Image (cartoon, rainbow, N blue to C red):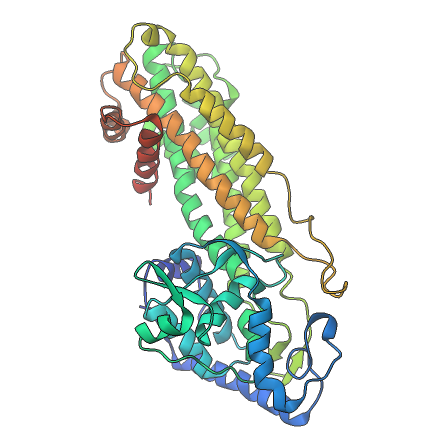
Length: 481
């Protein structure tokens, strides 16, 4: 059970709830929600014009609403924003979005009623699965993603029940829930957050921790393979002395991971290619970029990014720009570039493995096709293309009122694709190296022996290369998570 209080929420909480953990709201958080809503009620009573509370949105920001039509305006806000297109997001990602928005409600900046927060909690706890299209956000609040969820909450939209797509009201009924009727400000509050970028970003960064470990394992496997088939690999670049001379936290972690698997006292060449020798620096740069991105995600997760912001201390609703997630987008773009370097060096090591395996291939002793290397090279070309920045690609919207956006959601989606491709490149390197280890002159693979044995078992399966590589991906990530 994940309990939302006034304590800091971390990436691990998003992952836990996305994977099925239930959620409770502590009394301290309930109190914050109630205080926040009291500010909204007071501002409504005063009649002061406030964006989205008693005015229309976007280009209509200066048009006052008829007080009698405020409830209908909430439904119109959701209906108008529910414009996403593309394939539905996986259930795990939808749960991450839902939870992230619920966290936002408990921070006190949203001004929603406790009833709405509890309704979102029950959507999670009763496993209601809204259909959320993949594409639509420009990164200035993930409006379309959140509107698809809010639509189900109010009894419209669509959701999955037992794998079938059904109307939102039917999905609520199947879970024993009634649609909620949104009150003043709640239509905007439900969608005014970067919950897709933050929630799905959290899931990706969690997975990337395992990818970084897998990259270190692939390096160790390749070094062991070369040690058994040529003049060996040089372990000295991974020594503690080298790491102390360049004290990067990520580099030290990667070097330690490689040493723990490969060892430090192997026969060595005079100097290995950079893709081997500088592996801790490359993989470590990914780890350092991950650490910065994790801080950025958790900053957004625990901040009050609503517009207008409900400020409990001053008792005001203030128009602002905390929704503009440029810092988040930039941190994710950096991770994507770092992944490109990890994948590129993996492919270069794979090239070296291919060159030392020529004799074995001619003798018909290898089961992995030689052109697996070509597949890796093709993938790296795509990863390099994906590394290009997208956060500067926004356009002016809503009659140039919304004239800049972060494209954080697009940065998340490019990162998602880069992660998947990098996993595949590392898997091709790992299984190629493992096969060479099993055929090499070194009989004892040391700490790598269990992994080598597990990967070698995949080679014996009567599967296609693609199926084998997918299985290796699962092994690499599974052993380090």
